[in-house]
Length: 627
Image 1 (cartoon, rainbow, N blue to C red):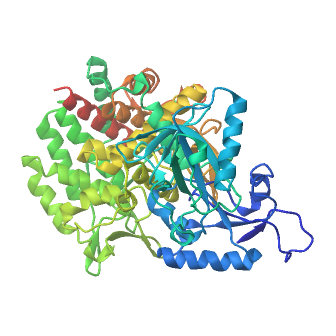
Image 2: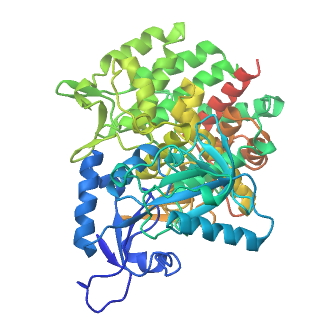
Image 3: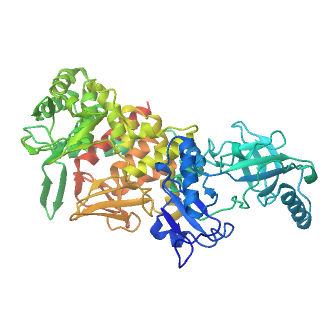
């Protein structure tokens, strides 16, 4: 798409020098708002002209093909070679594809032993270098230390450090300029340099010895800042810096009498909500003026949370193990199975009182949670046979397509691939013989450096949608962290602490039922909107997104607070746990679903099964870590 950056009467007029703006995948820049973003200041050194915004994901993978496309577009825009501006914060493999698209220009770094002592001497030397090289794209630097990653570390006169080398993100996430051509050793021909961010490095004792054998830079110098920010890269750097804060330094986990009291309270919910006929439990309980309002429909996710909570209760010795085992057997025996051709699977929703089917269909994410629970029960000798019998009833091979487990909705089949549960599924489905499952996290977590892999992963997280605490931390507690899970946990924790430092607001985001309309909200980390932490809920048929900080439905999740301390014990997560312990307890009833962020007021007399089951899981994990 071509955007005319100049208010010209004749759209077909041949304009002046043009620019290709290669956008990071999530630069928060669309052509409707381009007039505001593409200010005259941004392009002051480019001159007035046409701006071509390119979706880098649509570029041909073959560099030669991408270069041909770029040349054709250049000819169609203004019959001249285009110069390029490219943000160097893209993952490296995408960066290289963009580079092949653009005709080259070059920049020159002149490494001097020392800078002249006066501004007049410096400016005079810079003018000499520009004249000698035939371009304004000259930066005088000193240093030239070769780092372990192969980059050259140089310093400008104002003290700014820059790294020159393989372009893209360095291992620590900082951008690296490049690629480097040592102009003293080689004089590449114009046709050999198709990289738009080529850097020519001159080692010179004096400017008079500079070589001018390198190609000129089309008169455009691109090493200046712009206001366009890539949120994934910004987040990576913020998290890296924030994680150095002493309040996030790992501490020895603590499991004390107060936490044991919390476990007893959470288990009391599971006992009080039990249905004798099935062993299942009411999923939400609320009391108003002595009257109870209960939800008797249960998903397979909540069945999994119930079973895992009961297993945690065994570990925490909250009740005799044989009594809890009898209940788990009753639960597994009560679960219905839908026979659908060659497939057999548990339904989407059942009634806790008699296990009758309330909604037919199949939810892959909820099934993964249930599978995780049942595979863990199989590790208990008393439950091994019952677990094997239940898993033997399920036949999900027919629901797999291309390594992805499909959802069955009312009127259609839907892939579960683009979800935050898909990676969790790949960790548990091998227990059912499905070892070749696909994960969007795993497939995105590719690149030459950890920084590349992290930014790629964050782009995918953004594409999926709001990232809550679950199932991210449940993977830690139940299965141990994968590499993808560990990286996202770091970024998530760093982002929560950064928000706290900026606003003073303590977050513990997760999806949760609430005690007022809209009754259920999703909240968490969100790269795809203006604000980083958002609440999402349904308002009729509309899906609403609101900033957590200002939404009346912003919730401090009780289960998230316990999970974060169990997984990453430190002063900050202890602060989260203290908040939950102080405000989320409902004596004789269970742990409250959460607190409203506005004042951290409790959802009074409102508790749910998923929260209390996961609190038990977190506390059992914590106790295990202290042994």
